[in-house]
Structures are given as structure tokens and as C-alpha cells.
Length: 140
Figure 1 (cartoon, rainbow, N blue to C red):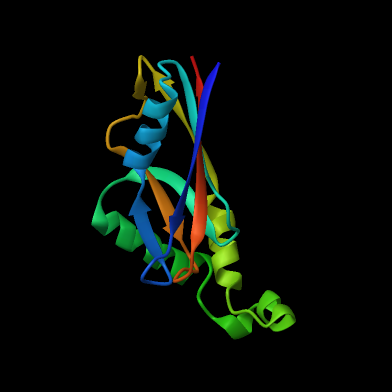
Figure 2 (cartoon, one colour):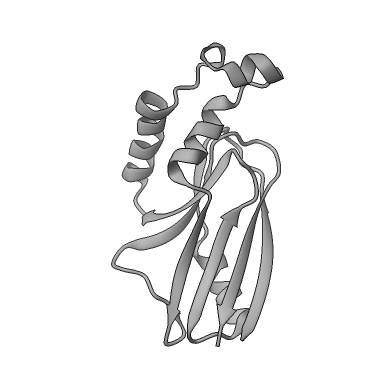
């Protein structure tokens, strides 16, 4: 089995941001030189996510609005985590829990085996500081 691991650090300009990282996933697959296997992509922080969806800015807007309006509004006084720790990012933790922190992308015949429109995204819910993602390709 061949493997390759890369780490990438993101320092977003906004507190919440969605970044297409599909090309980084493909770079890791290519460096591992795998034709059959998988690539694991995982956020290494509990206030960020990795997910697969459509590369469409209107959808990104909808995701951010859905998280703010229906999942975990950014209301620091509403969360016990914030009062107990002195932080204000409980909503980011809940958003990460909802979206998830990792994905596995299959590799078939030397390519990332996506359905139509699928891409890999890093979702930052409490940014403006360095955060890492690990990408690990495994296979033959």
C-alpha cells in the first residue's frame, strides 16, 4: 500500500468562510501515485469542517445563512460554553458538529471518484487565525 500525507494551514480573512480544496486533495493523491484507494481529508480543529458539495457561490451563501439562522446563531451570550470558558465560539463548535470534520473520497482508476458537481470544501466557522487540515492518500 502506498500513502502520502500533506498538511495545509488556512488563515481566513473572515470569521466564516468556505474554501474549495479539491485541487489540494488531488495533489496529495497524485503524490501518493495511487490508482485505487481513498483520500481522507480532516479538519484538525473543532471549529472547522470538511465536506463534499457543489461548487456554487449561491449554495455557499445558503449554507452560511442556514448555519446562522437555523443551526447555531452567533449569539455568544446564548451558550454555556462561552460563559464557562470566556470564549465566544460555541456556535462554531456546533456548526462543525453539524457539518462534520472529515470526508473520505474514493479513488478509482487514478482519479478522485466524485459524482457530478461534487468538490471538497473546507468550512471555517471561527477563523482569522491559522487552522490546519490533514490530507492522507492511501491505496495501490
